[in-house]
Image (cartoon, rainbow, N blue to C red; front, top):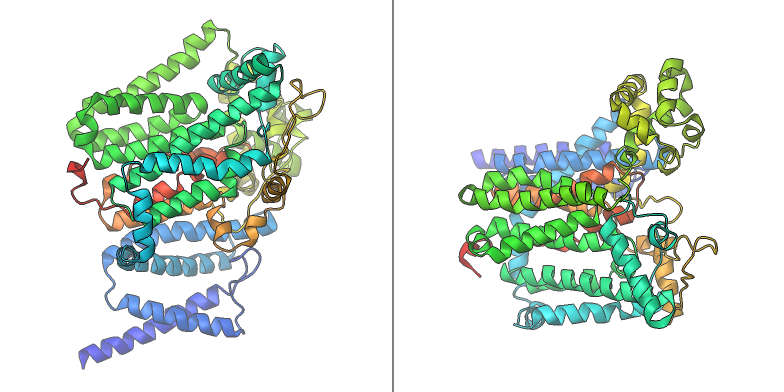
Length: 599
């Protein structure tokens, strides 16, 4: 009798929660400007039935642990979805809206429910998939002693159509200014990673020396980058084998790396973000190895040396790499109780080396230091937005101080989607002389313009946490190159496509975003997907009490945090964590039992 009564109450409670969720999800700004369902539609009724059933089965044996490890993550994702939906539609955000809290709460309940179902059934699904014929076939390909080389060669082969389509490569983004540093005798600058500039320009010199044509240099660079990235991707997939990750998952990872048009385009690109992404991925894989198999990892000096080299290379190919290492260091030190001395060496050696290279060594070579404006995109943009959109709230005294750092003519070039036009005039000498006054006026103006500051921040960041849109400035990907005008293209670089039809397909991916028309694929290829996956993986690891496994995710979280502070939303800035998607997903597919002693 008691059990029957409990079941009846559970049905009533589930139906009530479901009604609340359907009602709240019928409000605006759930999917862009639109609700998820209309209140008077048959879909609202069907959704109510579906949610009622889900809540009923969930509540039968709901544990406090399930709730505590799912709801906080669900709440974060719900806020991201709701804020992103409103901002993408209105280009503003109103936190005082009552509907905001209703939709966030409803989305949190739904997301939490889905996470709990994931906790309960994911392992069973993976186990069932391991019994399929597809898994048996995939096992022969991915789990043999030559699997790394098979993966490496297969990835390169799959990239051949893209390579021929953009032959000899895609000369784009910062390649022009990097070429000018040496070929136009502008002088080396740390504004772009010096190591990448030397690699890129070195390839042009060698190529020109061989054939007398700088396009041969671009071909050489493209081949080097393709080989390196294929090696990194094969390494990441092959490492899954040692953790008994399902061959089907390895197969999906291979498809992601080999056939994703986003990957095929970017590995042909001359931008520094690509090689950095390769080193970043290797560092993530090796950090997981270090956390999961401490004894094996620290048993040989080779692993330590490799970790140091990869860390140094990562930092030298992207300026924010060192900050990610600094973030990771204390957490690694905390969990490596038996190996703290080696951990200190493993992190301090790269940090000290990079500081010396970018400091005294660069000064000795007369390399121009990076401009601090690159780290100040958010406050620069916020000040400009406040002055342009709400000039009456900024006093003449405050404006006078602002104009010392950002000349008035540059302030009025304000473009909400990018800080490049405003920060171009940033007074570096004034900031180095008196940075305190800059931050003081930034704070005083911000206290009077909170909404303007929030909206300014969202203009440069919402695309990194909201998956229903792919925001960009000018073009999604500069597929046809940059700095290609005759007066700027001093090396006479030009494309000579061998597969025009495939070139047009990649161009449509870059300009028309044809991938956004394909369900699921559009989500996986979105620049916000790595963040959402990271949060889901973190929730699963928390539920499983695998707390130490959360530490490697700090690499992804740290880099994602730096994208929020960048000058604009661009998929190339997110690419280093996009390539980490298969590895992050594999973290909840690993068999962790007895891995400490496995080799």
